Image (cartoon, rainbow, N blue to C red; front, side):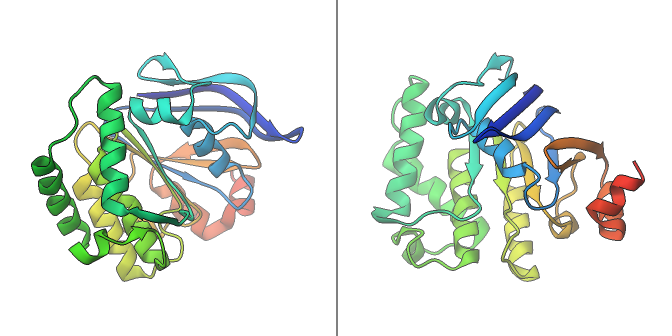
Amino acid sequence: MLKIVDLSASINNKIILNNINLNINYNEVHVLMGPNGSGKSTLSSLIAGKTEFSIIKGQILFEKQNITYLSPEEIAQRGIFLSFQDPIEIPGISILNFIKYSINEIRKSQKLKAISSKDFLKKVYKVSKIIGFNKAFLSRYMNCGFSGGEKKRCEIFQMGMIEPKLAILDEIDSGLDLDALKIIANGILRLKNKKTSLLIITHYNRVLKFITPDKIHILYKGKMIKSGTKNLALKIEKYGYEGLKKYL
């Protein structure tokens, strides 16, 4: 589904990513780990089409199509969803209106009819029940006055409503206690269909208590230094990122 080939990128003439290679197949869960400043969020931003970084070389392929220089709108329309670490507040736009507009823009790009009100509300009921949203919450303005946990749940609600082919979840576990993380993780797994792949970005292995990945990748100082199974996260917990590097 996703293939990143020899990708290098910089900002203000400083190299952030150096020769990154990554392959994600359909119906796989990948976890990208690394310390602060390692380039994890930069990589997710480049996949999603953000333009503040300069691509030095390399390609990003999605379903065998080169999406390296497409706009965020075009990439979203192709089926890639990016959740934000700290979603911005959008006063005046309710969650439901925002999501309905997003769904219809994606459908429009695929030359499909707008979703009917009946089908939309049916989907809202199903997804909101899975992640524990109520009707009052859904009528609120987008992220306005939300707690950290509410913002995270709202991001997962969007994922469930949009049904992307690839969902990139950037630090979806940050700022959550263990109970809230369990709700979020269970929601992600229940909303993920058989064709959907996940790329979960995190510092810690807490989320791995609830979601078992197919592969874990370690990004360190802009380089992909190691890929492996869930056991790799246990080594990080034992040795830390600096210590782990000595064992590679």
